Image (tube, rainbow, N blue to C red; front, side, top):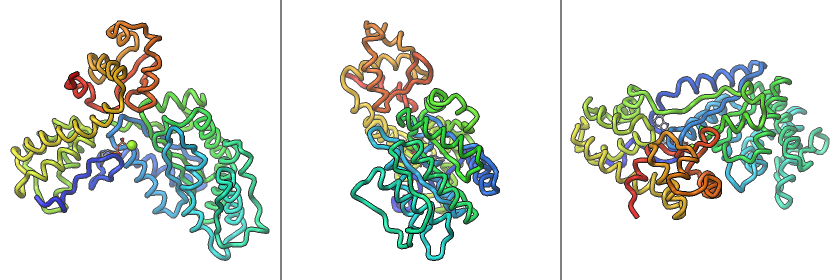
Length: 389
Ligand SMILES: Nc1ncnc2c1ncn2[C@@H]1O[C@H](COP(=O)(O)OP(=O)(O)O)[C@@H](O)[C@H]1O
Ligand SMILES: [Mg+2]
């Protein structure tokens, strides 16, 4: 069928035509926004799960929901090497410009002035012009160089400005497992203090399944600070809806047996559903999509995943790292003990420490528990087993 109207969207962060099966997470976020807007404290939200389950698109939906309420929202990605200070500062720029209207109140002016000092703290050459006179405004001082107090000051003043306008401030951090420890600690402290003051601030963090443990290590009270939501494989009905509902909007139906085939092949993983859906659409002659279309689509989709989704990760590994990944594959996707891997490779566990650390830094594996490693993408074990050399 027409590739122009193909409604499926495989790809990191690509918004699906139908975002299904995430009602619990969306409700938690909605409650947080409404509580904050009602002047109450709210639990910030943590989303965790493997790659390809839909954390990024959910986080983007969170940001959109906040913006639809007129909130100030900053969405950033925790990347190794980049600092959260720059990330948050730059992500706020457009909303700050929108805030700066003639005749705004003192608290808005104060927030703008503080934002200027925050900008100066990481960008000595650049500056922002808001087109309003800030000479007599309070604020500033978010440039001490101490991340926790600078960001805390910025968000506190912004929350004050938001309160004046009956809205709130949302900060959304993707790939939060990659944040350096001091930044995780700072985020926890800032939300903790903001909750106690009932500041109009709420956070959403998304990351690999190791994120909840990292937060707990950063601050012991992190457990109470956030509501934790696993973003996992979709239930069969939801997976089916992810296929049929986008097609319906294009006036295309699916045979039930075709849907079942793909739901089974994708084992609930949104990325795989989008890939198989896209490839099945490509081979289908028209409506309804048949079982045979689905068979061909799945085969084409598997190939595309092998050459893309899995391949880009595999190619990032060195020879020694590939050996390590192969030794893990024996255990399937469930995870492996470092000791077992070492035994299989005929090495001492400690000698493999650097290999393991590199694989974690590259985002290929994570540690679900002490002394255990697992692949960050679903169905990786099978792919690794298929790799020769
Ligand atoms: N709830 C969902 N329903 C249908 N498709 C989804 C859903 N969540 C994510 N997807 C699709 O899955 C793929 C991966 O989503 P992404 O947010 O990048 O995952 P993650 O950030 O967890 O790696 C994208 O192609 C996206 O369109
Ligand atoms: Mg993501």
